[in-house]
Image 1 (cartoon, rainbow, N blue to C red):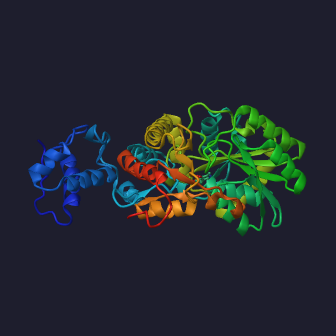
Image 2 (cartoon, protein in one colour; image 1 turned 90 degrees about the vertical axis):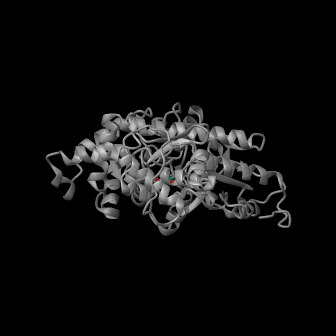
Image 3 (cartoon, protein in one colour; image 1 turned 60 degrees about the vertical axis):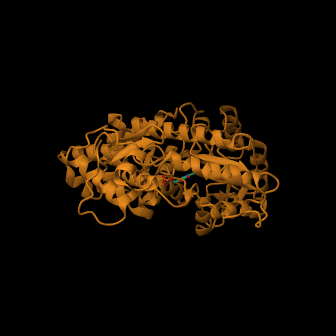
Length: 462
Ligand SMILES: Cc1ncc(COP(=O)(O)O)c(C=O)c1O
């Protein structure tokens, strides 16, 4: 049985063992795909607690040396350990401490080997100096073509000339608001919306007007009424895997929304940031209203958020002002980052990374069904999130505090609700941020238990 060499190692035992795993991979004692010893056997051999070995394996996973699942064993990763910079980035996902369902991040850790490969390819290219220079839109034509191929898979009839590259979807949204609206303008949104839109609107002097939703998301009748009641000329919405409710509009609903938009000459900013997760999905709203929709997406949820690469596809008449807003806000996104995304799209890596996100989302949603079945959760089998309307005996804020006391972090509806007085008693959980499925299961078990308790603080024993 492989046994770590802890000679001369200092610091906590679990870190010593994790470091020894890394060294054994480097010196070949642990080849690719080798299975690490069962935790109990190694604990006995080293005369440490089982918990120390569990922490050591979780730490090794965090550093990218190994992968695996509880019950199925821990294996040395293929493609070697993650580079150090990726291990550092994953520090925002601790292997111990509270289970954090509050952050909306994709699952960690499958892109590092691909990044090494992409950087090697870039290193070998003849025009490295281009990445160091200011670029015109024409210079990055091949990035727009790759983006065009990528988003066309969603059913969008995209044109590369109509693509604007941004620093992620968040920047894409800001660029759209900067280009399309003036201070004092009304922006329509779903009654619950992506929380930063509220802050962006406040900073840009926009007036947010909430539009009611039903079981399929944004209601066409409510949108029609909102257009009549306001002078709004722009709608921001999330038709696919809406946050926080996880709802996806059907094709019929999209058609109805497009018709209302056309009737009121409304521009639509469609946030499709989660759109690559479902393998089967209705076409983007932009397909139903191509001349009035600014389609915004990014590689953050499908490939890697740290690349900060976003794609906006817009009707030709709006492209100029959108590009001007990119110039104004950041001059230009770094071409090196969109080069990496383009290489991944072209060589199939993007498909592989996206498939990893999909399968991880599916596995975690299955865990949610196991623990929360019968508790009225709303979720999509390929989404990252859960929406949990609470039983009558719980107020959302009390539930959040109770979960926090039991080391589980989650969000109430408040940050998402445009009119705070209308906040439903519900919570949102993001399942993808945690490093391991084991921790997701542990957190869900606590949430399930809490749902059956009352919010009487005397009952909640920490
Ligand atoms: C609904 C929604 N839109 C946009 C974004 C921003 O994504 P990006 O990382 O591409 O800026 C997020 C990030 O969580 C999101 O949840």
